[in-house]
Image (cartoon, rainbow, N blue to C red; front, side, top):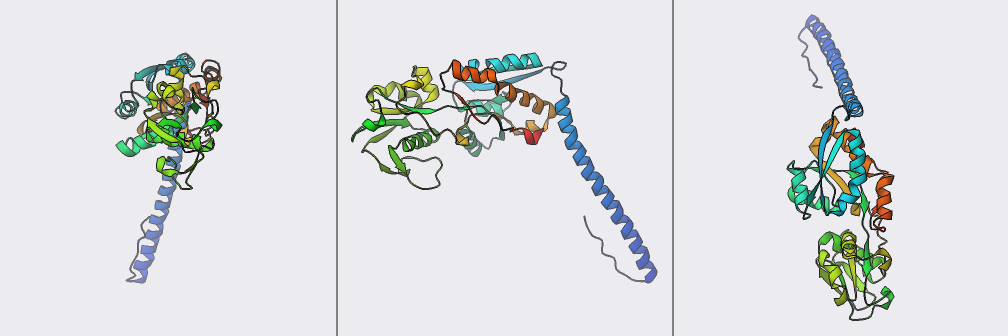
Length: 312
């Protein structure tokens, strides 16, 4: 609040000025207090509006972008549950990992669910997308497979291990190999390590960087390979066939998520709808599909976090 400095030119004028100044200060204080109360009331009204939304009486149509037909199965229980609430969620398929964030930012879809947090952040940094993680979904393990050895202890000098060549998955694959004792990573702050971050090898093995989607088919040509869970699933590899199972599962940056446009989170109706979508996915029915139908390839993570709490 600006302060008013009065110049005293006479006793009576000064007295009058002080009276006026005090009156103005009192009014300003009252205005500030009323303004603060209005803000609080507005915030409360947003939460009240969101809680009061009845989608059965006023249905809403939403589109969510995914990559891969498997998401039709993973999202089926949520889609069915949301339909009963008046929220019609349409699954929109994309054929690559580049398009869904662009489609979300441009309004072609309302949400997407295909990526982990590191990938989302890399897209935001590169393209200046204004997107927000509104709910965690699962983590997909990166297990090690081989058709030539039954344990990483059998590795010998000259053997080859394939890893994904994209930055985020390669970094995670190297962490898996480090956890398995195959390599030792340098003690630095590089969350996403690359080959230059390898300090030493237990055996003189060669690490070969390959496109993640091609790695399963190269298993006959390499000694072992770190395989993305979705590609292992597509290729028919079972988790019990892995010679080493991913133990780097507690790093939140690798959790997959549901993303929304940040600007939409100022709309109480959309916040209420998105909250319902998140809760419908984070359900026992979805977890049952993870365990029963997909053999542990999908592991529920971060369901105890309310990523929309600040917007309700």
